[in-house]
Amino acid sequence: GAVVSQHPSRVICKSGTSVKIECRSLDFQATTMFWYRQFPKQSLMLMATSNEGSKATYEQGVEKDKFLINHASLTLSTLTVTSAHPEDSSFYICSARAQTGENIQYFGAGTRLSVL
Amino acid sequence: QKEVEQNSGPLSVPEGAIASLNCTYSDRGSQSFFWYRQYSGKSPELIMFIYSNGDKEDGRFTAQLNKASQYVSLLIRDSQPSDSATYLCAALWGGGKLIFGQGTELSVKP
Image (cartoon, rainbow over all chains, first blue to last red; front, side):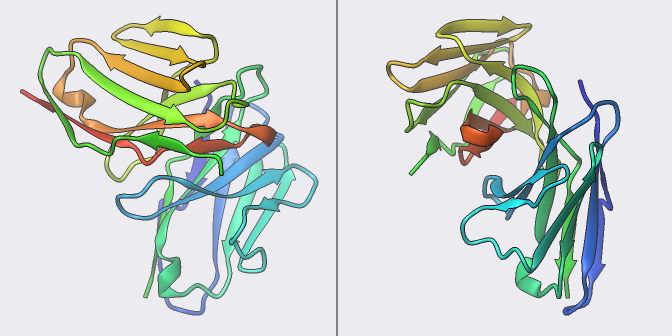
């Protein structure tokens, strides 16, 4: 299957700082990437859809100014959590959609963010 | 409201048995469905996808789709302790988005 790399795997930061998470498709081009957030014992919640060369589309209730998404190339999307607060602590996971007919999304390993 | 519903479990089966995981979805417009497995602390990994009514088999896994009943299931034959994980059902909506169910926790007892 296709490989999606996500870094860093874990971040611990102080409240008020910004954190950048990278998501790369290693062996395929991804015009569309997705960012999810998962709280303990809950399912994945889609935050935003990231399209190469255009603005991201955010889901209802997700603050676009807090969660900045950049998709500058066909293999890289970044999520920046600005002015992070303890309530932003969560497991953030990206996925990339392969350009095949099945619309399969391949997931990165996830980033566990802990804001102190 | 687009929803995907799963029984959260936990579902416990003995080693070697068949595990049956079920999922229903609310919007008839969805055409494709995915089963992901997620180990604790890890990200989801794709097991199977299905978009045609009927059964689709891959090794020990069989996905079943019934669009009339808006029902998707995953059968795991000869369950192994290593199959113990949370299984996520997802439906594909417009724009390539996946809507996930809450997941079913499966425990396979040796």
